[in-house]
Length: 63
Image 1 (cartoon, one colour):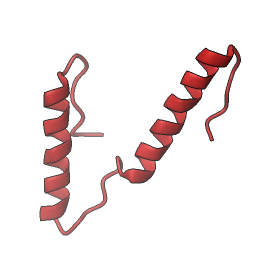
Image 2 (cartoon, rainbow, N blue to C red):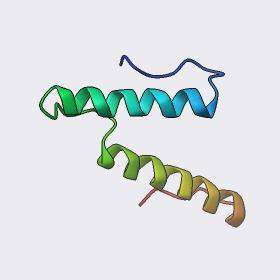
Image 3 (cartoon, rainbow, N blue to C red):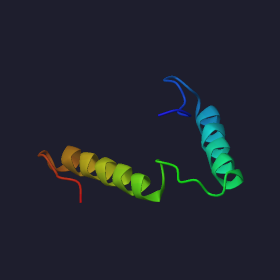
Image 4 (cartoon, one colour):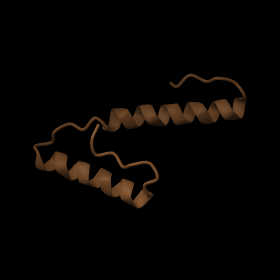
């Protein structure tokens, strides 16, 4: 998927990439981006499950 920052990219550069993608979608009639709010929700669920797993000492399934 194009538009993702390369590994080792700074947070500022990654943020700039996200802003560029948002602006591009707005200019192109709101074309959907695969990294939308649903994707973000899934990422947060995985991170939350990993954190809970680390604290509880067992595998936790994302909600």
